[in-house]
Image (cartoon, rainbow, N blue to C red; front, side):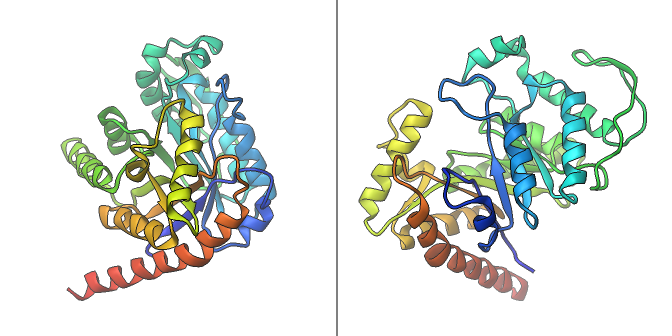
Amino acid sequence: MNSIHIGFVPIGARPSVRELEGLPIDSLWTGGHVAAPNGSPEAMIGLARLAALSSRVQVGTMVLLLPLYPPAIVAKQIADLDRASGGRIVLGVGVGGEYPEEFRACQVPIGERGPRTDEAITLIRRLWSGAPVTHDGRFYPMDSVRIHPAPIQAGGPPIVVAGREPPAMRRAATLGDGWCPYLYSPERYARSATSIREFAANHGRALDGFGWYVWVFCNVGTDGRLAREQAARSLGGNYAQDFRAMIERVAAAGTADEVLERLCAFYDAGARHFILCPATGDAEPGSMIDRLFTDVVPRLRAYASVTQAAHRDT
């Protein structure tokens, strides 16, 4: 059994979802916004597209900005997609906040995004039971609401919590089935894993079956300096800030050996499901993807297998 899973975020028109599914990957992912200035697609539409075009891998949102959506709509759409895909859906959620205009557009107070997300996660799980649900909540009260048919996956698809700060770690530890930070270093990942385990222990919750995900922006090049420059420009365009001084901390960019070293450090920090997102700027990612899956991913899997075997023998 693989000790790690490899996920990928399709960027651009090539390669297609069907071509990507032919690679040694385990999952495909989509993000999305409702009213972001960069014109991002909406996450549920992206998830439906991935579910329709794939047949083998898990497909998930990373992330759906949960406080922008009524929980009953999310529960229904995800249940339907889970059934249509044969039980391959993962619901990755976050609170957002970087684009206040989204909250204005959806008429949701931005200051309520955290508690709304907490309440919604709990409510969505109950709605996935297929039984009538009565909920006396602060934001989403309802009386005898039934969402059916239920998802294929028992108890519903995994809910993975994304974020970077302690409130998201607490949410993952107490309500989520997994944790997925982004723009992280391996060192910060290790610290967050420790915090999540502490939150869970204080809450009396075991983390059996908990998913340790990490979103990593990648650029594998023959020229490591150029790959890092491209990655910095790509992230700078996405987040409207200068990433040149921090790119080595928040991405895996460089030669194949340099990217491999970075991803192995995330494995050592506790990550087990890698969501790899191309950060190639204006350049088409096709050749980078070839290098990633030829020169990096097989060696990462080998490293994980050898490391896991060594731990079993000690």
